Image: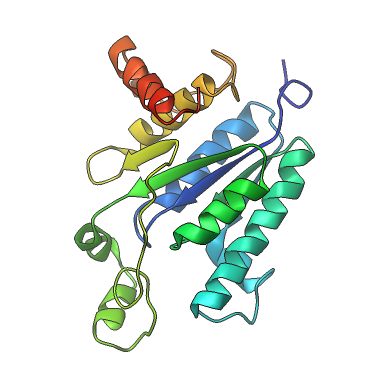
Length: 211
């Protein structure tokens, strides 16, 4: 059965440092949902900046405006039955909480990764330029990243593979009631979690008060 008629909209918001793996995870999840017939849209922070937020800089005010704009679009999609997937650094706690309050069905994924690892992954040398002072207000270097403390899902990409991260996200979405058991396609056979691991995810969501 296709899920267009069976699913409710929600927003899956990926936050984390540049190079943490947000976009890779988001694209994997998007593909799984597309393959299963869900209505889904991916809003990537870099793409949004060249379209919806063209002309904004990287001051705190402009960053907040950019994230709020993405949140507004996610809200419209979500209330119309679409799964909105947002992938944006979204470094400041206040504006993340603004979007959480704005969007009725909001699930946050903190893509956690040490700065050193993100720097190692940076093939474009952007972190190197930021460390040298050539780029100002760069998150994690000359501008802060305020780590979330109440994310529904935490993926540590220096310790977990992308497939493990995808499996954890799908499992959490099932526990939160956004996916039915067995409805979503898993990317690889290796993504199946043991009962013990499933229970740990469920316990985390209970501790946070989400289920």
